[in-house]
Length: 455
Image (tube, rainbow, N blue to C red; front, side, top):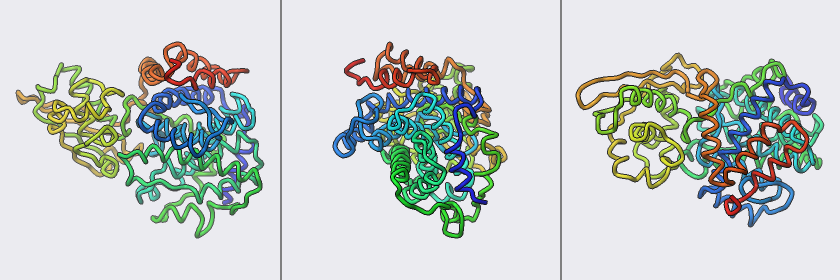
């Protein structure tokens, strides 16, 4: 089916003018959401540690590091990708378990700076990269993901490669080689969920994508049909034999993966969000506090069992993959933002007391197996014997269950302002809204690379 060539041709030949206006606007929403989250992540403990590594081993002046300074292009991509996923607040596809923007936009951003390109070039590269990640993900899903691979890091590498290659203006032949290089660098394990290595997956994918594109541009060789064949990426990475090359090729350039992106209202694994919104609706409507609750039972799709691996979390990273903690935070606060996902809040005895009231259960195809199994059913029983049941089929923030612009605005400023301050946060948002105009990319980089000392 020549899927490697088809995907390479798409990345090489798609121009800004080929992309519908509504797709461009949706891309801007995703980029703003990512930049806000990445700015917060840049000052997180994970951000500090990855920055120390990059400063020591991948320094340079050619590419911007959000919330910080500069680095080499691979170093900036590693930093910015890790920042974006540091607190698990970044966007996800609705139809497949992948965080697209954290691996892809950092690669686009690094590539466009190397090429001295424009905001239009960055948008094009980003949209092309999201498409590559989405299609590679669907071609290998669910076997690849079910076998323990974290697709954000694995197929995200192809998205990052496509983005960097587009920004650098590579030929189709060079992009085929870039995909071949990327395939050998594509790795991330779900076993590391709840640790610092999970956000590293997004940064690794971004870094490897930039490296693959730059090596290919320098004439480095690789197999030029890496997806195809018995030992091609597709079959090797799908032990269940479910590789579907048509998912890569059919409708390419006719439908757009950006339209499948959902924006997180909570900084935790997306699999927790439907349950959190369902519980939030009950406690707000009935005016229920944590002391009024006898028990909470949450039903989730079987697919959630491999992600929600911390029933009794010890710290904030584990709490992101604990449905017990996530619902406890909703019961205590009727919301859960960056403040609640802290080591101190997790360890608070009042939190632990509510965590103990939550029980989980898993059901096969809870809602017919649709939309990556993100739905939930919450049954809340009060101390006076009242029982309330709330069902949320789709994760809030997803295209089928969007959250309000006001809620996304609040999220952006909650994340961006602690790093760059209110004025620069406004400037970042304005620059992204105008990213397809002259000078907007420079304004974005100037506003978003101010460190916390300048806020």
